Structures are given as structure tokens and as C-alpha cells.
Image (cartoon, rainbow, N blue to C red; front, side):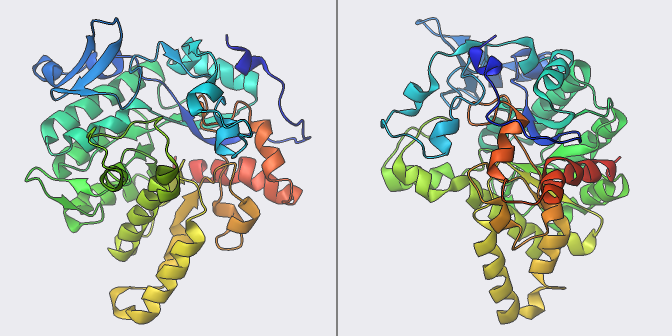
Length: 407
């Protein structure tokens, strides 16, 4: 096991409550997609070994560098990029230099029982668990609806087998694409039967078979959202490849044709594609009336930060006063009632609590990704300006209550 996992926590606060984490991950081994995938689709989603011995993913004939090592047999250690994201780089190191020596993947990164044991060792009581590589699917294959649905179903079946959905501490999401409305309902019914009450929807316009796109709040998806409301399903918008990297590539003359997960440039950092995708998704859901038609739905936004929220709410308020006829109610009120947010550790939680309810702010570590935190205790240093009561809300009771409301 990497020494990264063995290091001492940055702080040792005293607390007597369980930690609820909104953002854990597993690294998908190839069988996560291939074990249950119809063989007729295998040529569209292949792991191939190159002449240099490295394994790459070929998606619909395109050799992808999106994830440097899509097998995840070797990965950057948890938390190794933390200093970079805290803008603490006085030596001017590259991200690769800051990463240090990669580590061999351990069972806790892709096995439910081992992950649960690691949660105990690190001090997590419960966590929502997301995929990693699955974010490649819709942006490249979304217009091929049958293939997209088949890959999502294969992944969800693997998760049901390897993690399960019902132990009350690990809450793996069911990954669902809306590209085929009837297929989305069918997949939702499948994960519900398996015991899943948390689903992952990509924060992006929905790709359609005809090559076009539409809002996820389009009425063609109402049967899906109605079932989510009836079954008390928690909707998760986790950062993904939402297609916004294309804007950076156009401005930069980059011809590689895809997002590269760990590729960094100053212009790209300032463009903030993660926050932009999240705010555009939320804006579409609110303005297109999803929460008016289905007032029981709640949305949890993870790993997209929170610095964009105050400006978004200000723009919403101005739009509401300019064009009130386009809204059933104040969009800011709708946001504050229906949207929950996981801020980054480099964000100010106290500032966020000035524009949205503290009860709607949830801690997330992004474990075991390199940009995340190793231990939940580390986040207490970032919320030391909050009262003890508010710290408990962020670290425990907010997500606990949200999960319990969706069981």
C-alpha cells in the first residue's frame, strides 16, 4: 500500500458523529464494461495493447488518451495532486512531477468489500460511490443509443455484483444515459430492482439518435423523471466529460479531438469547464421546469466546485426580473430548495453558505482520486471558520438526511 495512504491526517479534530462523504470512486477494471456487454458491441469498446506494451482504450475505432492507463492497474496515489489544486506550487512543478511515483492499484479501488474495509480504516461511515472511466461513454458514443445503453447496463450489473446497493454505508450510483427515453426508464427500473436509489446523470445536453441534442428537462423524459420522483431517487450530477473541453481546444488550436483528463494549461484552468457544465445543467433543469413538474426531485452536484454558484444565482435573479413570464417561481428559490452542492476543498464554504442554505452543502473527498483528500479529517481545516454545529451539518447530517430521504 502506498505511503500516501499511511500518512498522518493534517488535523485531528474532536467530533462524535459519523462522516458522510458525497464523492468516492471506484476504478473500473475492463470487466466492469465487458463482463456483461453483448459481444456484438465488443469491437466498439476495446482494450488494446500497443507495441510499447501499454494498454489503451479504443472507442468506436478512436484510440483514446482520455485516461492514460484505462486498466487502472497503476494509478496516481490518493491526494497526490492536492497541493496543485490548493495553488501551492512554489517550485513550479508540473502535475506529473507533483504526482511522484505511481502506486499499484489495490482491491479497495475496485472491490466493494475491500473499499468498505478501507472506509473503516480512514474514518468514513458512508459514501456515495461513482465510476471513473464511465465519463468517456456519452461524449463519444451518446448518439449511438443502443451501444450507450448497453455499456451503462453492463457497468450497472457489474456494480450490483461487486458492490451491491443495499448495505447502508456504500451508495454506488446507477449510471444512466437519457439518450433513449424508453431505455432510460428501463435501466432505472433495473437499478431500482437491484436496490439502487442514487443515479448518475451527466451534466450535459442529451445526445440524440438523429445527431442533435436537447435539455435533460425536455418533456420527452417526463416518464423517467416521474419514476424518479415516485421512487424517491436522488439525482447526481457529477463532473464528467460534458463536451466543454472542445471550447478550450478551439481557442488553443488543439487538434487531438478529445479531452485529456490530466492535461493542464493556464488557459484551461481559467476557462473552468467543470463549473460551466454544472451551472448550465442546473440552469436548464430549472428554466425548463423540471422541478416545477416534479417538485419531489433533489439534485446533488459533486466534484464541480462551488465558486460559480454566487454569480449563477445573481444571473438567475436578474433573468427572473427581466422575463418573469418564463418562470413558474423564482429560479433562485428553486435552486435553494432542490440543489445540494459539494464544494471543493479550495472553495470557501462559509462564503457559499451566504448564498445557499448550509443544510444543502455536503462534504466530499473524491477518494481515491489524486485530486482528492486521503482522510475526511483533512477537510476540517478548510471549514474551521464554521461553527461546530455547521461543521457537523457539512460533514455528516446534511448528506445523512438526504440519503435517508431517498430510501
